Length: 394
Image (cartoon, rainbow, N blue to C red; front, side):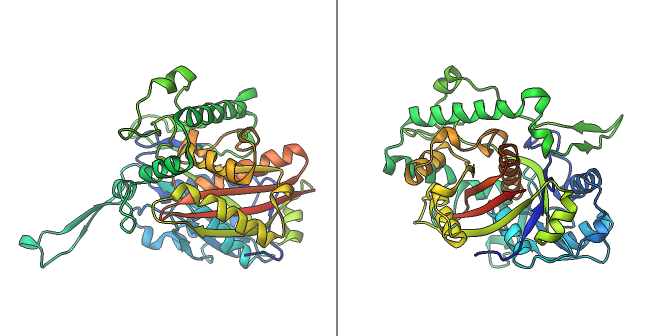
């Protein structure tokens, strides 16, 4: 899908810090987190929420009162006349939200908000009157999704192991890529987190007693060394994926403002615009999820009328290091040229907002370079993938 005139003003992409699940954001609902992060982001940018024409709200883990999610969010932000769709497409939610906003971009900006709390995910009881004693069917929304794809019949880690086996990806390769990703992340922390401060919005977390906790940086990123990775055992017997070369669940929120090029330039105050060119979605064979970012990326590039030769920077949602090894081999893009300043492999995966944070980092990397074309691509549940092509312009 190609977009005609959809832009984000420079500086109008943001993300909260990500916190490892059961960490400091564990008791803040995703809806509440969306309000707190979005409100602060818009205030810092001097934008009145009442100027928005519509809202797109992305989430994947049900929270209390989420049935009224989008209109409640808009009203609490100060835009009680605004509403819009809620989108849930697993790890592709961010791209789907941006696509929805870009497809109908107008001079009245669309506010895109994504938020999820994997911590304390709901346990759902489905009535089953014909079951033994009328006992209900039980589903743990987060844990059961990790454990098994109901159609493919495999866990998510099993899909990574299957691709590694087929492609001859070794444990040593995965450890090397993992170590590189942590080194790249540390670059974002240099100069008192100068890079992250370009897009990251702190979160105030209420506590039962005392002052609120101010979460200003990612929580739960483990110190990682070559020696430490080598000591880890595979997650599954005989496999190559370890807890070091896969991501961890997390909590967080991210957002953006999408409008026309003219309006984006006005809001950007001369700092340029981010032009959304195209998105692509793809699905690969059963239980081969880490392969999906490749055809999704190629679909987005084709829709944008570009090839890999025209791409200046890549960010990936890489829940497994297997994803990046496979993508680099198939697209011919060097490992050390992708995922500069960090990736979800390192700082975790809140699902809905993960892609939008990566897009924010992609944009800031390109802004530091003076502009250029960026590609985001990542896998999602159901052996699917989603990709976005954008261009940062003066």
